[in-house]
View 1 (cartoon, rainbow, N blue to C red):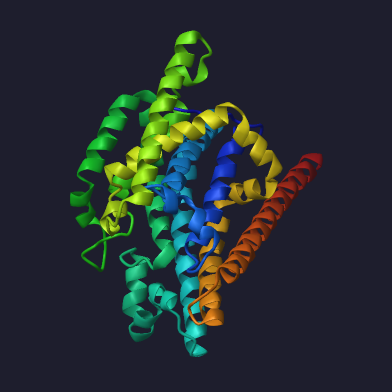
View 2 (spheres, rainbow, N blue to C red; view 1 turned 90 degrees about the horizontal axis):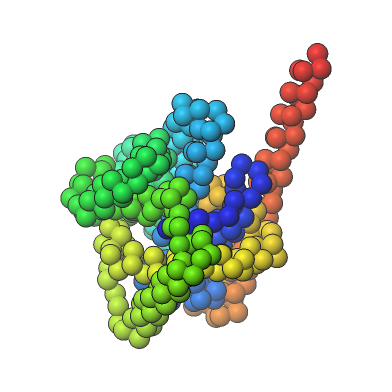
Length: 379
C-alpha cells in the first residue's frame, strides 16, 4: 500500500488535505444540475466517483489521528476521541437535514418548486412531521446529500476496533473486511430504513475502502518507499498494470453504454473497487514524485477546505442545493453552459470562503486557549 508524507503539526499530510479539498469541491459541482465543471469530474471518466476517494481518505486520516492521539495521550484518550467524533457526525447529520428542510420550507412557502426539492423530503415532512422527524432521528430516512454522514458516523464509532486491529494483524483485518464486503447486501437488512432499498451507502460494503485507507497509513508497501533496483522495477510494473486497468475502465466508461443502477454504488461493486485501486496507485506515484505537493502549495485555499472537511461538507450540501435550485429557476430548467459555469464558480467561491472562515475560527480558538493557559500559569 501507499503512504503520503506527513507534515509538521500532528502528522497531517498536505496531500491528504489537498485531495480532501478537491473532493469536497467536486461533490458540490457534481450535485448541481446543469453544472459545466461537473462534465469534467471523476464520475464522467471513471467507474467510481468522489465518494470512494472521500471514504479512503477518511480511513487514512483516521489512522493518522488515532495513532497520534494514542502515542501522545494513550489508547483510552484515542478511543474517547473517536466516540465523540461519532456523536459529532450524528449531530452534523441532523444539522444537514434541518438546513435542507428549512430551505425546502422556504421555497415551498414562496411557491417555487424545482425537482431537487423533492429529494429533501420536504413534501412528506409537511404531511407527517412527527413520523418523518422520528425516522430521520433514528437514521431510517436520510435525505439527499446527508446520506453519507451516517456511514461516516459508524466508521468513527468502529475506529477504536479497526485501527488497533489493523496495526496488530493487518492481513486478518483485511480478510474480515473482505468477507463483510462480500455479504454486505445480506447485512444491509439489519439497518434501519423506511424503504426496501435501504441506505444509499451500505456501510458493510463501504467499510472495505475505509479499512484500505487505514492499512495504507499504517502498513505502506516497502516497494513504494525503497530506492533499490528491485523496488524500482516492481513499481514500474505495478504502474504499467495500473495504467492499463485505468485506461480500460476509462474506455468502458466513455465508449460502452453503461447504466449499472444504484445498487452498483450502494454495495460498492468490485468494478468500482478495482477502478479506484488502479487510479490510487497512479496518484500515489504522482505523490511520490512531489507533483501533488507542488500543486497543493499553489492552491492553499483548496487545502484549507480539506482541513475543515466536516464544516465544508455540511455547508457544501446547502451550497449545491441552493445553487441547483436558483439555476433551475433562473433558466426554466434549461441552463446554458455559461450559466452552469457561473453557478459552479459561485459555489466554489462560497466553499473557499467557508473554508477560510472555518480555519480562522479554529485558529482563534487555539490562540484563546493558549492565552488562557498562559494566564492561569502566570497566576
